[in-house]
Structures are given as C-alpha cells and as structure tokens.
Length: 114
Image (cartoon, rainbow, N blue to C red; front, side, top):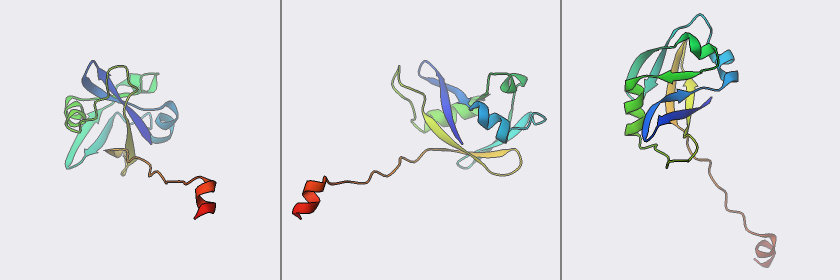
C-alpha cells in the first residue's frame, strides 16, 4: 500500500494511511503494530483516532528514520509517497517507492526512417 509522509515544517512527524487501506490492513482490535525500517524493528501504538478519521502513524524513531532517508520535499510540495508492505500479522515493512522505469519511445517518424 502507498502511504504519505507527514511533516511539520521541515521535520517529519509520521505517516498518513489511506482510509481504504485502514479497513483492509488494520483490524480495529489491534492497537500495536510492528514496523520494519531497514535493519530496525519497532513496535508502535496506534491511537483510537487512527480509525476515526485521523489515520496517522507517529513515533520519534520513525521520524528520525524518515529524516535519515533524505526524503524531504521542498516546502509546498506534496507529501512523499512510501511503500508500506504487509510482512506478517500486524507487521509492516516501510521503504521508499522505487520510481517507475521510463521507457524511451521514439516517434513513429523516427522508427519508419530507421
């Protein structure tokens, strides 16, 4: 699933999860999740507001990891998307999205001339 960074000024404060992903991947009886950040493995508490319109995952360790990845967008830019990949029961792996490969397409005129 794709999640977005949340920031306050230039500092990251956490992640925002989409409403449909909450229903699909986060059972309401789970208040703790495991988050794998490269070689780090941390347990995070989800607030009751997570299921009430404020789907945010916040933790100082997560904020430091986000900052270490140099994901900062310029002020006024949209939040940075990341991949939050299910990795077991209430466990997720977070990683930067890999850019889609761009195929070089030549105009038809160049193909016909070749």
